[in-house]
Length: 181
Image (cartoon, rainbow, N blue to C red; front, side, top):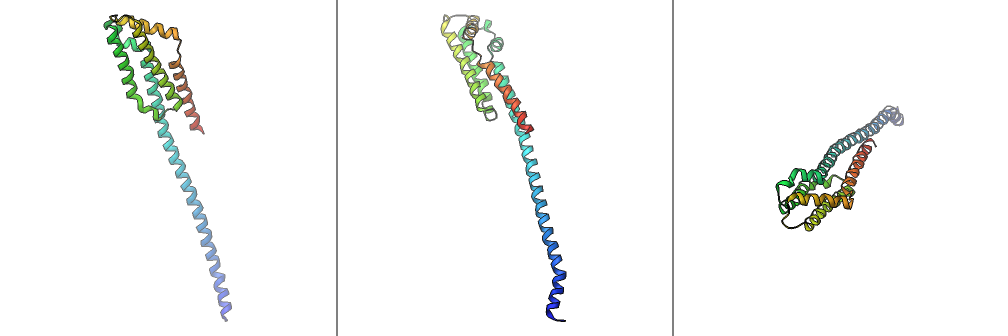
């Protein structure tokens, strides 16, 4: 047997084995790449679900904040009849600011537009309270301040708080549309 024939015979046995190994490596690489993509997608989905829960909780918290600073609710909780105007004025501002500070971290999870509308609602209410306090006599009862606050709100017809709540509803609905995509 000559050497060329032995090489051909060896190639006849070795080449299919090499071809089989190459095909196996390629298939294995494709399989591993797909598995990696599936794991990454599952991880993204899990992260999205966690963030979605945090965002929904943030929208719930700022909704609660807005409801708590709604003038009727705020005045009911602070009992204007039991205070003079100065004490009620200070309690109103303190309550609005402390509730806000308690919820300030929620801005991380809500849309910028909603956060700015929330700030506008809070600042608008603070402005109305300050304006009402300036319009009443210095030694007035808390009920006089409460009446002036409600009158100014009716007069201004400011819907910023309601607009903010509507924006929250819109944002939350869009969160669920994002989840479907």
